[in-house]
Image (cartoon, rainbow, N blue to C red; front, side, top):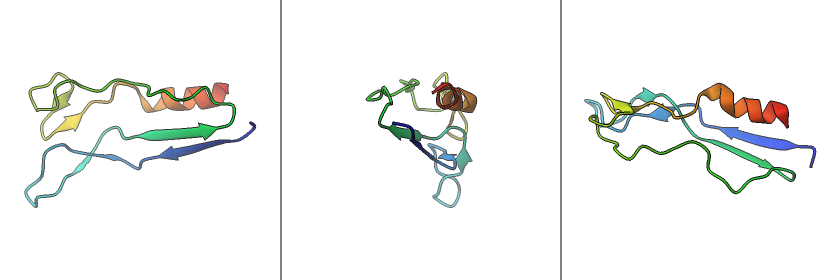
Length: 80
């Protein structure tokens, strides 16, 4: 109960392919926390309903604006 394991992605990827049929670095990512005393079983943040470039949280070339800032994740770890 005194240890928390935090797994963090290095970066996200664009939703749309680039000229080489790959994807570029983007904002956001995914984070995973495991601990015996963690009140878990939840997904925090929100998922955009429109993942096209016309969506309110996506801009060309398919970069999704994260719903939660990087610092908010670490705030919960620090308070624990």
